[in-house]
Image 1 (cartoon, rainbow, N blue to C red):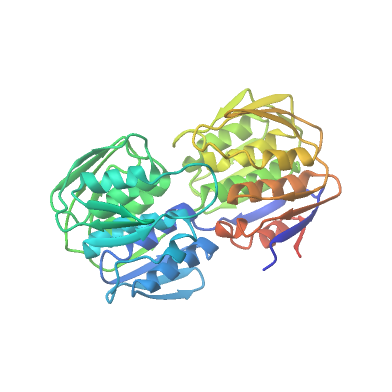
Image 2: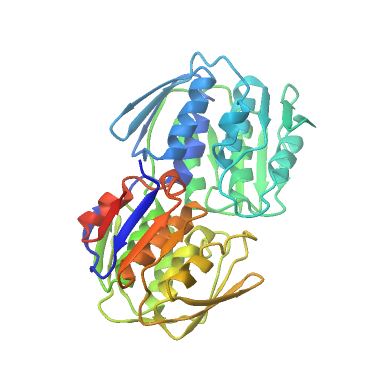
Length: 417
């Protein structure tokens, strides 16, 4: 598939869709399938690039994986390997989440430093600290990390930062470790709750996900499991943004509105009309957008860093001056020079983006450098006068399934060259 999109801006985004399954849920769930040594059926699985990368890892470990529409079935009964090859690790940073699952199943693991979007330093020190707390012997040499979990034990783990990945790795290993492990200052994201539900479905005993304290009682009595992945809250935010910048209206089904309260709060402040149901969100934005004083990215339930680029795009065409503060990643403003090429008026200083809204953006040739930046630039193109060309869409495909097709169905003029 081409890595360039061409957008002719100005069309209103209107209509209804069912949002894809959550990327940030399904990746740790796919990793967890190695633990039970049995059949794992995962429904509502988005067939995105990162999912295929995870499937490649599973197959390299000896698992049998089949795909039928949006259902992925993993048979891990004949898993025969505890090593993730360097080429597979480089495909995505989330590959590190396989480590806890492999240790739970095999008691040993060999990995290299993971890859993914370049968002600044994202060391895996917290992950290794978790493993050490659980009794894993960790040795690092020549770019590889060797982990020996023969002497794992339960522990009280206090995370220095509520890292999603470190919380997930602790859950994966602890669910098969004898005794009761308690994680404090745990990540509270909805995807953590989804992983808990999957693990408990296979016989684990995990409780507290969605709060700052998670308790896991280890077991070796696992079973087959069938699970439906939650809707993707960041993809939902993306389609809401598309409607907002085009003065459109949209209904998104398959999403728990409580998962994106911080995002819908922003749209409400901008002047959009929001209606929420049990599993849907409706938004209408027929008038111009208002600025907001400040948005600060924070761990859940705060404003998600994954939606920061989208917020910058939306606020770039809002009336007045807004400030966006990025507190999670140090290099997550790479979309801003590209937005400025499209007539946005944004200056950055350290972790702040100061956005003076313009009436409308202008088409230009721009480049995406990460997953969420790619989506934000496409959304900008929907607003812009003239034609916008966005390259670097190999990043987009890591997290969005048939994105341009969905936008076309909602009225966008977009093609991939």
